[in-house]
Length: 291
Image 1 (cartoon, rainbow, N blue to C red):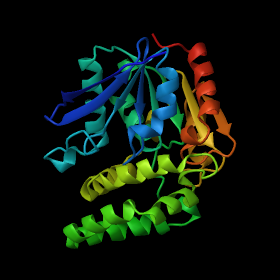
Image 2 (cartoon, one colour):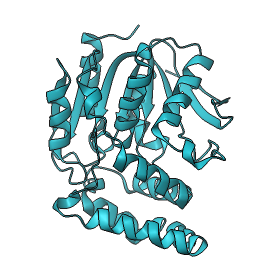
Image 3 (cartoon, rainbow, N blue to C red):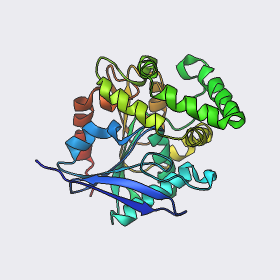
């Protein structure tokens, strides 16, 4: 079956240009990737579900084909929620199934809090509702490193930006990201990791720092008990970036939600074991079909 891709741009609330791609037709599925990730993180799901659904992928503000707001305070979850709303309205999609991965889960929690009328159901993969950096890998090293990086950027922005792009695209960084639990090297193709690394290098360091601040400060836990649409929560047993305690907490707080643990799944479970993930989501959509 040939599925045609359509691309476009919309102007968001503050004039920022937001890029989107659509494939297929039918009930809509909107996918939100992780911070400094790319649409490629959803490639298996896009290919599979576009045969029966209209899939919509959106580049976050400050990411890839989308513009960066002049006001850096608009690099926020509120801004992202407004962007997704703008795309929905532009495409005349009244409601959709929303899927989030990692940072994308927080983004969708905030969007649900602001615009619940757009949501038919939710799929959360390797997600979290509050700061995942504190205690990452069992220690506070990640939080301390981020604080040091931010302080260094304030003093030497051009130097740090240069090293950010050079290091992010290096083969060593790619392997380290996998070894840290970001990918399962036995399951995810190295090409996908290379695409991710190039995507990281393609995002300006100041954008990353601003959105990381958002990720660390935003607490979506109070919203969870107000989520009143069917929700599927996917966790990876080998995810050391955001381990299962984060997904189990979300499952506990969202009434009637479903939880599935994917064996050997890393922080990118949907790339590691796409067939397993797709079939489980497909079953969820059959039980809770979007309009």
